[in-house]
Length: 417
Image (cartoon, rainbow, N blue to C red; front, side):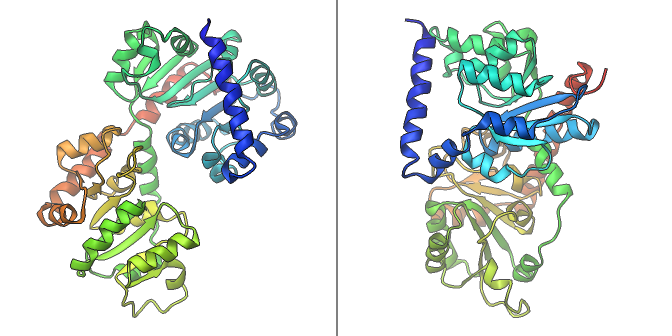
């Protein structure tokens, strides 16, 4: 039985499951509701003029968007007349970036299918399609290939265990053949692709996230409340923390009151902030401190209960702790801390991320599993040396965006003839 049969079964089952879940799950409801009347919404909001260069970028979620963003913004900077359509698969990406002003329109990608793909491409008429890192949809890619629309993958990363490299993976390999070019993060990915006949269509560009964090650092502005809170004491900034991270940090803080802690939890709902206040007795939230006199701060823990500050807060750190490392999916983005030349500590699940593996070998990143290990790592750390390592590592790995955009420009894919 052909693989396409099972792919279609998967699509139908997935969509049915999400639709059923939408009756009780807010995220699933957004996934379903956000795709209603998509053709009408697209027709109303995507109205380019004849002769416009049209670029469609698709991202699975927020993390992929942050990788694609430097490329979009460089394209727009080089040719402001380029029209950009940005699509997301997941609500966690769309809901946060639906008002992103770097795109002319932002929407959910309709579920993959022959009819949806045809109608979507008919309406969008892209000159260039950009997929970021992981998203591979059979009908969309096939439609783009059949219409001879240039299609590229950026920030791709591949592993031997993926279906593309298995004896039974012909269906998946055919999707890769639909790309005009694949920009990958490392040599191992390129070698895997070369081994399945894609050697003329691959380039090692690196990871665009390095360019993104450098751009953020260059735009850094001080945070008045953080300035007042930190004073002259050593500071640990813990970002995107989960319960396992927070328990360890709380235990460590009991014996290390000479430090101040800024903690930006992954979840900022009121019940979680209240839980953190119980866990860290001498704490105050960002919202509370913003209404207090900041000249007489006696608290040693600041809880960030709003979004948009984390990447700037890392600059205040003596040492950074990046949360999520006790989850199976691994920790959050350590580059946002490393760009400021900060040593980084994470939980034990770090091996999915090349930058974490690299920095651990180099001596700029450290892993722990409990409060005792956290204490020992900080005591034994050469902060100055680790700081230099992280800062240099980010600088040395910049440039992926320029590599990609230069290739696109040579092909005149977003500039006028």
